Image (spheres, rainbow, N blue to C red):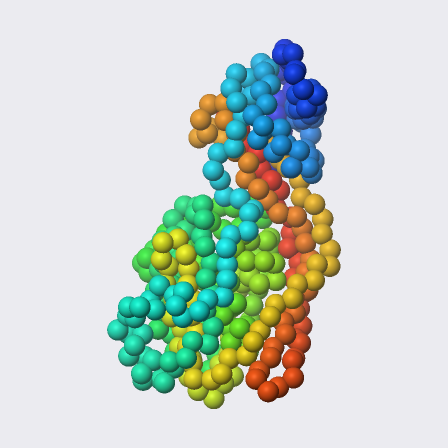
Length: 341
């Protein structure tokens, strides 16, 4: 993923008269970065992404003769998949898109099972989708909707929404591969797993199998995600209640909703996150011929982080219970600065 740039190019750097001291600082920083890469450095460019962002967000212009960004135009950010935290929240019945017009299948299942009480519901926004990610999420949600788990039964998410084949409607979506994001069949369905994990925890159901992502994701905090991979990683949970439970899910206007219905009184559950260790990520540069000439795009990554996740559970009339959900370690994902060659 890291690319060495040729060192045979000559550097000509006519710097216009700066009106402010920050102009000189901006020019100096970019010269240093250029020299580092002209020598083929495959290592750290800058751990201070904020400084680079500050320079470009103020639309500083630096000119030099090179195929790298900056010669005769403004360097500016293009919309991209980013590390900003997207909205996620537990929801009430009135927040669900089917609350005023329930599907007939949901009504029939609730009547049959007696599962009319909303135990928990969770929603995540999917912004800046990559490839056909939204198609995959919608398909997986449709398979999950209507799932019934009887008392004592263990549910497997892979068995419910898989196998992940084109015949079942899945398309290419984003998937972590090492420290890169590539397009694979059914990429993006992990959002279903993460959403369901948060619903299961809030319903105080027993988690049998859960795997975190190798690197942090944008849509839930660390320690609250789950990933699936056919034949390798699954998300499984057991209905440890005495009555059946019912799952419903929909993907509507860029937002995923997963709800759990049953007969029992749900507890009040609160998440607690303890950061145990953090290592800053780095920034690398690569050419992207698909970018408009003279533009750049910053794809934000993540720090390496280790966290411990705990929850507190409170049933009416009972003392508060604290549970340790374990420690998760996430590898760093480097920031990628793409430029038009």
